[in-house]
View 1 (cartoon, rainbow, N blue to C red):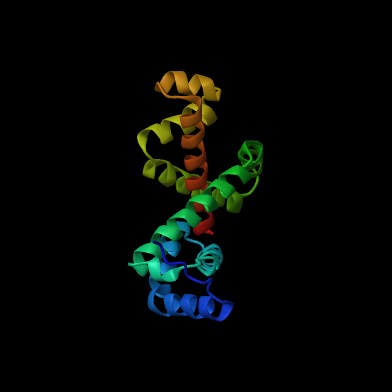
View 2 (cartoon, one colour):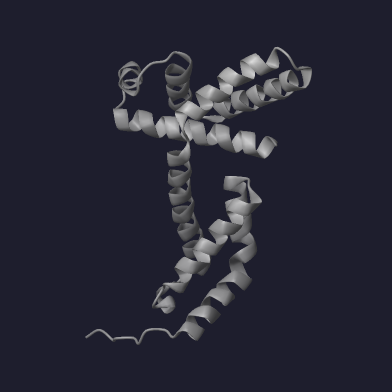
Length: 179
């Protein structure tokens, strides 16, 4: 026979989350900051983890709170990356590259900034997996469609899209951290 537990009241939930924050908050913040490299986004993600902890009805079933918090943070981070990758517009990148070429011809400061940003993109590309890097290059530089990239790499359309999303996210994060 299972024992039914009453739902936690809001005060109990709050004290549970406060205890987790006091014990594991710093590690959680460092964990997320290392992955998003943006203090504002990391703070938002920490708050999302705490909000999800407030939804836990039976906190006594959590045997290893630190592991639970990190697993929850990984899930929040995954959803964050999906949201970010969906907001990346390929047309924006193409337009920015086209504009940078014409602006760079006239202004030495713009030339320097453009060169630095391209170096950051190169670094981001070198940190990617070989397939993600190849997908990015074949799609953006060579102009192949997602299906053509899939054929060339011997992978599915879905995986090519994942590789491209990872590559674009890595480039955006690298450029955001360089500013």
